[in-house]
Length: 348
Ligand code: SAH
Ligand code: SF4
Image 1: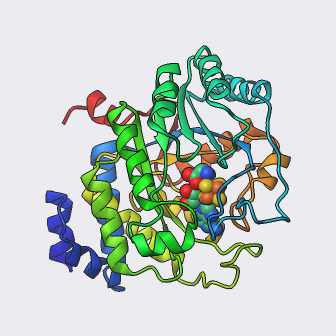
Image 2: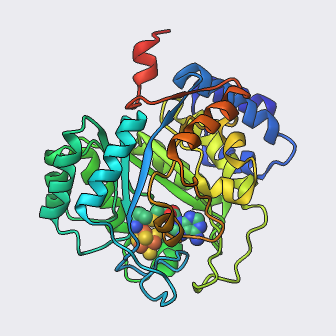
């Protein structure tokens, strides 16, 4: 196992079978995390890029079985920020020092292509990079947002197991989701994807396929998050044991395979483990996306239970984070943090 990790650390190649071996192995986990940490340091440095997350609507027309925002969840508290409120939140983020905002929401049809493009244009005037995470759209809509100034797009594939996708994402199509990712790449977005780890019925084989899928695109970013059962969904009774550890391993293998991409320490990891994000940052991750949305909205944006909130003072949050990161030898960086930025500024 040690040799396998060593070889992957140098070659950034692994077969599907080798990935499965790494994910199965219990003893070698710490070696894997250390190797991912070294690769992270070499390719993206010690800086942790911060991106301001704005969760602007909890309405969703989809019905993903794992998600608290699914349309059939009658208990969900819905809210929708106005374009002005979104812009004001982005402005506040810029004042704190953020250089990137991530606009995320359920698939909310209130935001027509024209309204969304206008929001993007207004935010661009603040000099911010924009990441969208608003779900599946047709190519024309993606093109319009790119033209309006959007730089990046986050769309997790969730799982590459097509049967599992069909089961837990009823009414959606895996092929369409993959089409979205290809369109986004062709349109010149930096593309982020990722997976849920621990979905009922998911296998290590399919997680290995997820990683090879990210490498084949290739993605510019990818977030790996443990699946956390939400009480008001069909998957309320699903297990959660082991999801954190497995997510960490999947993430670490991803760092070995895609050495210079941006990998967030996901909020869901922190929800399952009090030190979740720090551990992720020491096992391959290099990005944190602090939530800058109003507290009440953060609460209502209830994807899964125990979702961590950043508290009422966004500046204080960054100060606290800076201190925590300094303790593990890392610094926060308010840069646009595009893919490859570190290597460009620090040629080997
Ligand atoms: N509607 C958009 C963006 C919001 S959902 C989209 O689906 O792309 C953002 C992410 O939340 C999803 O990609 C999914 O991976 C994650 N998520 C949803 N429910 C979750 C749960 N129960 N546990 C962990 N992550 C979850
Ligand atoms: Fe909607 Fe995204 Fe939740 Fe699916 S995961 S129900 S698309 S918010």
